[in-house]
Length: 354
Figure 1: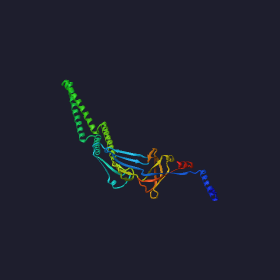
Figure 2 (figure 1 turned 30 degrees about the vertical axis):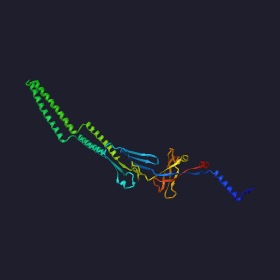
Figure 3 (figure 1 turned 180 degrees about the horizontal axis):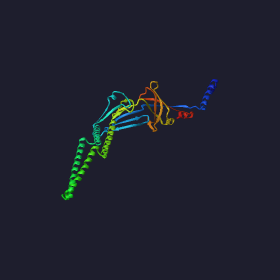
Figure 4 (figure 1 turned 120 degrees about the vertical axis):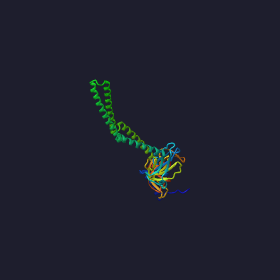
């Protein structure tokens, strides 16, 4: 018969301590930390791309990796047959740094420049015409009209004296009624010529009619609006950096330029579908390669609710904003940890057994 092991005082104490610890763990109301481990990719928060289309159009995209949305897009479509030239500035080609507001590239259009010059010439001519209408005609024309008025007054006065003499002779029946009536009609014509000459002189001295001035002002406003639209279109041909950052080398043939915002960093990570319920947003995220030279710390800001398949496993993509970093460079793949909400003892055991 095999000997029976008897409990020694020491082993008895050990069993009692273990049982006490287990009982204490069950009874005390503490929670167990839970960490989700994954691999994350370092990305700039925003990226600005200048893209050339197959049809010759130039477009820009301001992409926000934090929200997964395009904040702004612009498209410049050249007219068919237009002679256009697109060039990056030498200051951009010779430097990796880009400052916000810097002019990156210029798109020159011969047709646009010609249209703008033509409209500006038409505007100058219209403004000069308006000035003439407002100030009246030139002095020689005014003097000529005044002389015509004086002549009309003299002729009317002479004709009036002729009619008076004929009236006296008519009363004595020395002239016929027909001769008198012809002279009287001539007097009325002379008086009408005085009215016409006065009207012409007044028009030349005071300028054009209000209707003519209003029409010219409307034409000037229309030309100003057209010029403003052309200038706005021309301003869009100057591509300016929306933020400060670093110029990137892009392998895509249609990407003419890429600028990454280096002031803030984004970390994108796949999270297993079964672990999504453990995240609420705002959790602490740590990333690094095991040493202090490359590391980062931030918070979870976004979880894409779309389920995807990665290496045969269903995952959701989570995004974290890195607030503290050391040695992190866009494009890095690093080990990442999400500090989830501490679990109850029962929930931790349940997750452990899954």
